Amino acid sequence: MSADTPLKTAARVACVAPSPPRAVFDLASTLDDVVDLTLGDPDLPPPVNVREAACRAVMAGRTRYSANAGLRELRQAVAADAERTLGIPVDPETEVVITVGAMEASFLTLYSLLEPGDEVVIHVPYWINYSQVVRSLGATPVFVYTRPEEGFRLTAEALEEVLTPKTRLVILNSPNNPTGAIIPEKTLARIAELAFERNFAVLSDEIYDSLVYDGKKSSSILSIPGMKERSVLINGVSKRFAMTGYRLGWAIAPASLAAQMTKMQENIVACAPLPAQYAAIEALSPRTDASFIREEFQRRRDVLVQGIDAIPGLKCLPVPATFYAMADISGSGLGAEEFVYRMLREVKVATVFGPAYGGELYRNFIRIAFTVKEERLKIALERMGNFMASLKS
Ligand code: PLP
Image (tube, rainbow, N blue to C red; front, side, top):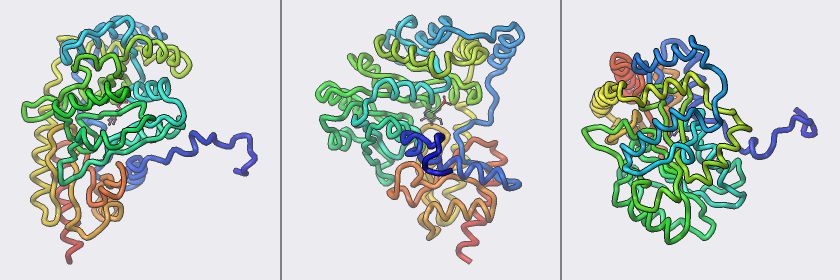
């Protein structure tokens, strides 16, 4: 397209790089018999009562628009769920916005808060969308790197070092995609102190909070007194109830910000899809037991970690939460990008190269999403073993 075409893309979109995990996923879908471990998209079905609720909504014609902030009954369910898990009061009338996935909740928050030139601190490795949206809004992502040899542990000291008078927002993602790392309560407490001292807001993306293994739990910075008033909590049903395609999430935000986000909602999507809203009401009801999802992923986690560690030249880092593992591939002698594309073409296992999540510090790592059944996971492990053996011969 010539430079003077009226369809020239706006700079705020042109600056967004295509997503590397999607590029590997797209290539994988052109090949036969690939074990696809690229996207964070669970293969399990949602609990049956949740699926039935979605069908009932469709059949009963409850398929029109809702209020921009979402159905009152769903906002009440979200507020009650947050009160139960975080121990904080949430007003369903003014502090909850139902969105098209956590993705839109995060977009709406950033869109409603940021001015060009604002700095947004993001801990790395990170979920790619954060930096893309921040850049696209003319704000500046500022990165705090966490190191594989330290279990990708975020420290408040490292975060403090990158704070400047321009820091408007700190994005926390715990449990973390792509590492599974959990930010300890003590670190959250120190970050909260910094938030008061240095006057920044926090976006806390807790979409993986139900996938914490070995009987442990993650903590939320919003549980710390005073933090709810300067934070936005992002969550949704995608990972907790295996409902990615329903596209249903939410933001819990102070009333003044939630009102602005709700106003923008009218101009972006009007509201989240109604059948998905009814399904989410059912998912959050006491009738739903989704513990099988966590149990299934914990079993797969064990199979994957043991399987990777049994392959000479590969080493899996501990996976306390989420359905992602970071595997150290330095024993292969290849960089992560070459490793990923060669393994995909030669033995048909698709993964994502570590640098996609924040740069060269992660060049010796690949991210493996264990979102396929145990049998397929075992096939993937066997193929990865063959691939490593082929590199040696
Ligand atoms: N936040 C993180 C950290 C994610 O990894 C993802 C999806 O992979 C999302 C948000 C988006 O979730 P949703 O499907 O609810 O839009």
